[in-house]
Length: 299
Ligand code: XIL
Image (tube, rainbow, N blue to C red; front, side):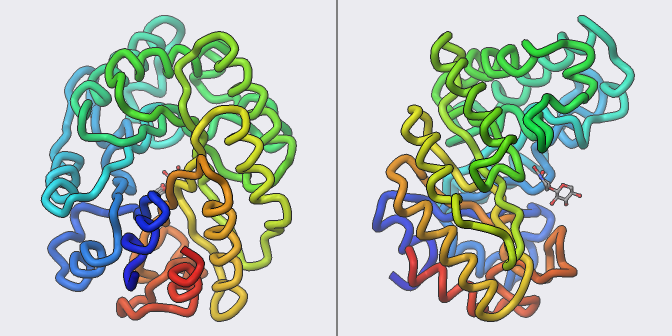
C-alpha cells in the first residue's frame, strides 16, 4: 500500500488525523487529507466551548462540516471530547453542585445524541488524572466527586449506544502511576458494568521519550478487555530520531490485537499546536518527512 490509510487497513486498522474544518478549502490540505487518511477527528470543533456556547444552545456547524466531509470520503469520525476541564464555555465554569451535573449530562445528551450514528468512538472523558494517579482537581471533580466519570460514561452510552466509548489522557505512554490509576478505574468499571469500551492514549511525545514500556502498557489494557486507540500522536523532533520514535509507536499498535487504530494530531507542520517542534508527518509544504516513510513501512 502506498498511503497510510491503505497500509493500516491491511491489518484492519484505521489511520486518522485531527482536522481543522476551516482548513478544508486549502487545496493541498484537503488533497493530502483525502489521499492518506481513513479517519478524522475535529481538533477543536466538537469540544464543549465550540458545541454549546450558551446553555442548551448547540452549535454543530463546524462539526457537521467535518462529518459531511468524512462521509463523502468514506472516512470514520472520532468524537473529541464530551467532558474535559479545559475549553469549557465560560457559563459552565461558575456552576456548582447539581447545576454542573445537569449541565454535563445535558451536554453529553445533546452532542452525543446529535452525532449518534456518525461517530466510531467518543473520547467521553479527557484528562481526569494527575501524574501521581490522583484525580485532577477540576471543577467536575470538586463539585461532583469521584462518580462524575462514570456518570459521564452512562450518559454517553444512553445517547449513542453504538459508539465505542473511550477514556482519553496524556502521559499514559508507559507503565507509570498515571496509567496504573486509569487501569484500576477501567478494571472497576468493567467489574461494575459501567459502559467503557476503550482507552485512548494521546501520545504527545518527543524523539527522546522513553518508549520502553509503551507496547507492554497498551497490551495490559487490551488484556483487561478494552480496545486501545492512539488518539493524538505527535512526536517533536526531526530526521532519523523522530522517524524511529514514530516507528516504535506504530509497531506497538500493530503488535496489540485490540489496538484498533492511530490518529495523529494534525498532519502538516504548517498547522500544529506544537509547530515549534515540527512534530508531524508532512512538512509545512506538505512534503513527506522521514517519519512518514517510517510509519508507512511499519504499518
Ligand atoms: C489542543 C488543540 O490542538 C489546540 O488547537 C487548542 O488550542 C488546544 O487544544 N490534549 C487534547 C487536545 O486532548 O484537545 C488538545 O488540543 C491537545 C492536548
